[in-house]
Amino acid sequence: MGSALEATVTLPFEPEFIDEGNDCYNNVESCALYRMLPANARDYVRESPHLLEYLHILPVNTVGIPLFLSELKRDLKSMENPNIIYPVNETTFIHIFPDPDDVRNWYIPIEPSFLHSVKAILPVIEEKLIDMIDALDEEPVTDEARIEVLRNFIQQLVYVRQPGEEVDESLLSGGTPKDLKDRIIQFLTSDIGASAKPQADGLPELSDGRVILSQQEYKALEYLMIRDKIEMGTLKPFLSDRYIEDITCGGVGPIFIEHKIFKGLKSVVGFRDSTELDKFVIKLAERIKRPLTYRNPIVDATLPDGSRINIVYGTEISKHGSNFTIRKVSEVPMSIMQVIESGTCNYMMAAYLWICLEYGMSMFVSGETASGKTTSLNALTTFLPPENKIVTIEDTPELTVPHRNWTREVAKAKGKGEGEGSEVTMFDLLKAALRQRPNQILVGEIRGVEGSVAFSAMQTGHPVMSTFHAASVEKLIQRLCGDPINIPKTYVDNLNLVIIQSAVKLPGGGTVRRMLSINELVGYDPETEGFSFMAAFVWDPATDTFTFTGRGSSYLLENKIATMLGIPENRRAEIYDEVDKRARILERLHKAGYTQFWDLFHMTTKIKKQGLLNIEV
Figure 1 (tube, rainbow, N blue to C red):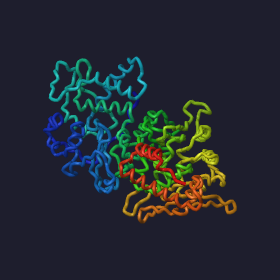
Figure 2: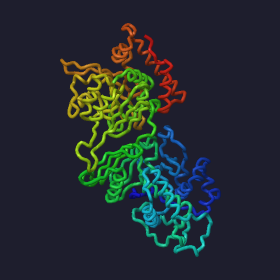
Figure 3: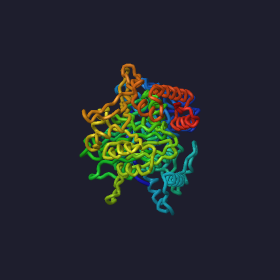
Figure 4: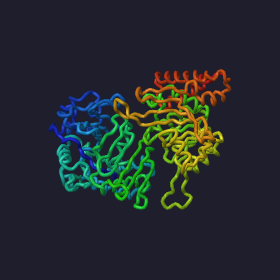
C-alpha cells in the first residue's frame, strides 16, 4: 500500500475544550456552540462533525467565531486579520488564522483525522491488512481501484459503535472503549502529529478481531489510511486547495504557502528536524516514481494532478535540510477575462493580441519566475483560430489548449536503468513537430538549443508561442543570441511580439502581476548590429493603467496584418477600428458572464463562425 507521507502539526493557539459531553457530537442540535454558529456554518458542521470538534478547541472567546465562506472573493485581500474557514473538498476545511506578530498569517488544514489519535490504531489495522492484501487474487491497477479495495478491507476490520451503544463485555477480547472526549483530550495534551506511534495496548476489540471505534474515529481512520497510503499524504489538503499557487518547504520548519487571496501564509504543518524531513522527501519521491539518491539528489517531476514539483535532497547541498517546491496547476486554466479581471492587462491589449495571434504572429511571454507567464500564454490560446492544428511541447505538462485538433508532447528524461538514447528532449520534439504540419507550435519554455529550432520553424512559416526568462526586450535578445541558444542575429526578427510581464508592488501595497509592455520587433540593422523594436502598449505604475502607445504607428498591424488582408495603404488606419471593435466584443462577453476558459473559447468560435470578425477590405 506504500509508505505514509506525514509531517508534524503545531497549533498556533492553546487548545480549549468546552465540556459538553458526548451529546455535543452525537446530537449537534444540543450543542451551545453549534447554536451560536451562522446558518452556513451549521450546514458544514452537520456534514462534517470533525469541524465542530475543531471549533470546540478554538479559543473563540479570544479570537471570535470564524467567518465561514463557501468561496473566496478578491476583495478579501484587504482584510487585515483574517479569521476565515472555507472548504477545499467534501471533508477538509482550511482555517486562515491571524498572527498579529507576523506578516504571514496561519494556514490550518482541518481534516477528519485532525483531532483523532488514530495513530494508536494504525499499526493494528496495518498488520491485519497485510494478510488481506496477500490474499488478493489480482492487484488493483488504478488509484480509484486501490481506494475501493482499502475501504472494503477497513470495513471488514472495524466495528463502528453507534452513539450511546453499550458493547456486550462478553464479546470483547480485552480493553474497553474509551470515551470520545477522553481520546481527544489525550490527543491534545500529547504532541499533535508526532511521528512516534503511540502504543496500541488495550485497544478494544471484539472476539472476532474487529477493532471497536466511534463513528468519528472510523471516518478519521479511513481518511488517514487512504490519504497516506494511496494519495499524497500530508500534502493532500494543500493540493486540494484551488486558492494555492505555490507550496514551499525550504528546510526544517513550517511549510509556506503562496495564496491567491491571502498571499504569503505559514502552515501549522512542518518538520521538526532534518531526519524527519529527509524521510518525507524520500517517500514523496518514491510516490511519484522518481526516487532520490545521494548521486541524484535533485528531482523535477509532475504530480498526478499536473502540478510541478522540485525536490532537493540532503544537507550537503541544502544547508537548512532537504527542500521541495510545488507549483500548483489549475484544473481549468485562467481565461483572458480572468487575466483582465486581475488587472494583468486590459480589453484593448487583449483585442490587439487577438488580431495578432489570429493572423499568425509569433510571440514570447517573457519575465521572471512566478510572474504569470504560463498563465497568460495559456489564456491567449483561446484567440488562436478554432480550426487550427496546435502542437504543444513541454518538459512539464502545464498548457491546456481548447482546440480539438491538439497534439500534446512532453519531453522524457532518461529513466533509471534505461540505456543511452531513452531520453526524448524538447529539441527532439520540436524537430518532430515540424513534420506534423501544425498551424501553431506552443513551447512551454525556451531555454536551450530548442530555441534555434523554434526560430527555424518561424522562418519556414510556423508561428511559435512560448515563455522565456528575461526582464526586458534587450535582455531577451542578448540571451537568444548568446550561449546556449545561439540564434543568429538575422533570425531574431522572425519573432514578432514580446510581452514583458512581471510581479510588481503597487503603491498601496500588495504584489500584482502586470504586462509591463507589449513590444513589436521591427527588424535588425546589419550595419549597426542593432535591433529596432517599439512598444505597442506600456503600463503606467503611477496610475496602474495601460497606454496604447502604438496606436497610429503599429508596425505589425499596418505593415504585416493590413498587408496580409489586402487593405490599401491609404486605409491602413482602419485596422485600429478593428482593435476597438474586438475590445468592445470582449467587454460585452465579460458583462454577459462568459469568463470561464471553455465558455469564452466557444463564444469566440461562434462569433467567428457568424462572420463578426471579418475585416472588410
